[in-house]
Length: 237
Image (cartoon, rainbow, N blue to C red; front, side, top):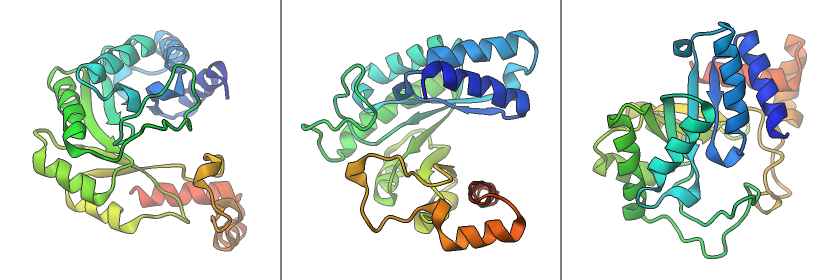
């Protein structure tokens, strides 16, 4: 969907009672979402302290000083003086050309390097210390990477955002986060059928076609999508 469509969806969702707005630099729509936020705040539909606005630094802005610039740009585009949560979108660095699609693959991309990640994380910590972000967190991390981060960080991640849906529950990672005081936050609650072709296989499960999901949906008189969303809400309790 285009940026303006997303902005209208955000505005409509807030009108319906949604209060969490999950943004990211790579989505390339934060300026349009910011205009929608300005309208709902200006109309008095909600107060700023009733919204929980998230953004994320993309892979090509992990270098020294780049994280700070990424956050500043997100704040400017969203028209806010602080973010409620700021995440490191992925634990890897790669070049992402202007206008390239999110599934662009950098041929020179390198594996995870902890010293590089800590350079990124130290800038995220500075943003929290400065009051520009209320909470900080990770995204798409594994248990070994989180162990290293918890060993070396000065400020704990409040959140780890992870793919989470009925056919991909990641119970070990979920439990690890809870055991270490990190809130697991799920994305793609209905699965990720639109992910890049390179990340698919013929054996992939499709949540909205899964027999168990279909059976539960039929039993409760709801759609498979609603069944997945209800599962996600219960999982987050």
